[in-house]
Image (tube, rainbow, N blue to C red; front, side):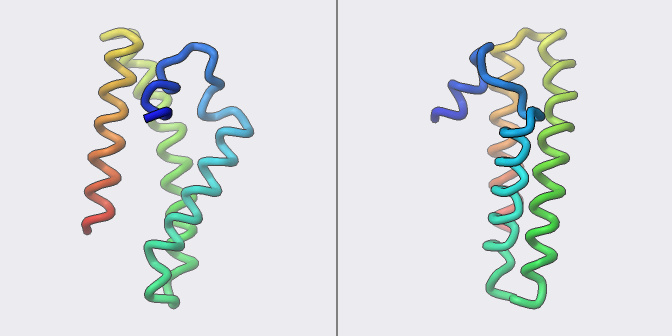
Amino acid sequence: MAELIGDMLPQIPSRTSPPALIARILSGGIVGWFITAPNSSVALVGALLGVVGALVGAYGARTVRIAAIERIGAIPAALVEDVVAIALAALIVIR
C-alpha cells in the first residue's frame, strides 16, 4: 500500500536514481532466484532474468509514465501504472 501512495508523491526520488535502481535490481534478482530455486539448474538464469526485468521495468515504465502524465495527468497515470504492474506480476507468477 505504501508503494501505491508513495508512487504519487512528488518528493519521492526517481525510480532510476542510484538507491532506487539498486534496490530494484537486488529485489528483481532475489525474486527471480526464488521463483526458479526449486529447479537449481536454472536458478542463476532466473536471477538474471529478474535483474533484466527490474531494469526494463524501471526504465520502460518511467518512459511510459512520463508520456501518460502528459496525456492524462500524474495521479491517473500512477494508478494505471500500478494496475498494469500488479497484473503483469500476477501473470508471471501464475505461469
